[in-house]
Length: 105
Image (cartoon, rainbow, N blue to C red; front, side, top):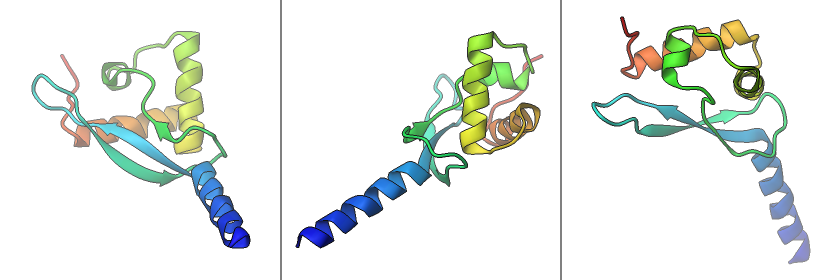
């Protein structure tokens, strides 16, 4: 009985460290709901739920970020996509546009 409990604990811990949930935003008039998207983390992280650390407008307009927001976005990109920041921003922008967001004039 104890071996089975220990094995289940190790499996759960392993899954917790390797699987994440991305809160992917969708655009709706007057609201911004999200849908959970499961993904395999590219680096081990104790965090389970991830969301884009900057506003969709910052991504869509390609605005410059403060150093703190830049670091948060960089860390998000490393865990979620393991790509350079410019490639990650392109991927996020593509998903935002597919989810109903638009580039404001």
